[in-house]
Amino acid sequence: MNDKPHAPDQAAKDEAKRNPGGWVYKIDGHFPSGTDVPAKNIIGAWRVNDQGKIIGEFIPNPNYSPEPK
View 1 (cartoon, rainbow, N blue to C red):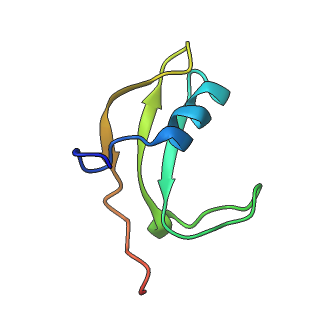
View 2: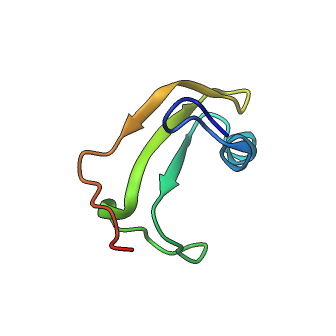
């Protein structure tokens, strides 16, 4: 278990490898691949360097609105 809130898990690290120079987003809910995710469902993101590694801190989305459970 991660001690830091929003520490990237293995799935996020794997996604970073597939998206060098981009971003990895933490999403609340399930959305099919290729579907636009509403801004309110994006918890936040990590920046990815050109080598496909997550860099820096998690950036929370101010527009995130948790889904009711």
